[in-house]
Length: 366
Image 1 (tube, rainbow, N blue to C red):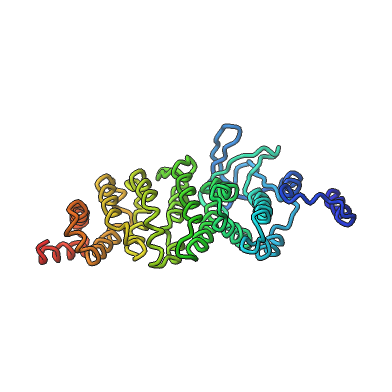
Image 2: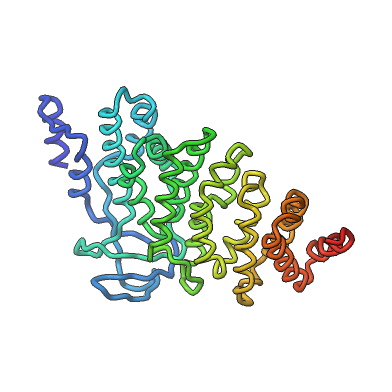
């Protein structure tokens, strides 16, 4: 409190250091430790290289720090003022970018956990904290800045700290990605958005934090964020329109890398991917993607095939593909072979849509 009073006096005397690039350091460094109750009981604490399993009933106290700054007021006050489209030049854009970077530092500081001595510890919750309603006031202008900046690499200072939060903060991350895709697909084609999307996805693919492992206690959170970042989660696909076909086609190499490395162990995202492929926006990658799914299905174990809704979604995808690409399949033997092989796998699972489609192909003597 003494420090806040001092700042007030400096402000009145017009002697307060208002360096916009570092204003977050003071409230963060002077924040007090506050006991934190996990959202759910089962969590894993990693401290000083050790890991201990415990529940909320155990005598282990976790702390968080609350910066001496009203983040909700900052977000609501400046979200429509420090907006990238209103910046008069590149210099002002950079100043406002630094402002939101500092605001983000304060907000993400809430997500760090400490022991009683103030040492940072990592807490892996199986559920995580829900996002704050006021987070939209931060994430909306941040996402707009990321999409609007001409230099994709300069935006890493905003999106990288968010994505590095990890699975326990997946609600916050998914909220950010929703705004990111909403602004990214406002226009027919946004080159910077596409460049950042590729950077995000490549960084994600190579991250140990987000490695797809069903044995992990946080596998569901990891799969949800993967689906959002790939642009195949329903909260993202609602913003797609047929005019975005070129954008999805531009991500084809990224989708292929993901499909090759992860699809056979990720039935959950495979199902969401098949839903995207039924959308007209994915028309240009649909035939190749069915081949990727065929390869994954051949490698998938019994648990992969037991994912609820997967077989039905794949059968519907093949039905859509046959109706819309019949002429292309007649010219492309390899694609046709992949189609027929995946169809046979679904018929072997006795799915009625697949059986009906195979019967129709027999009648058409294809």
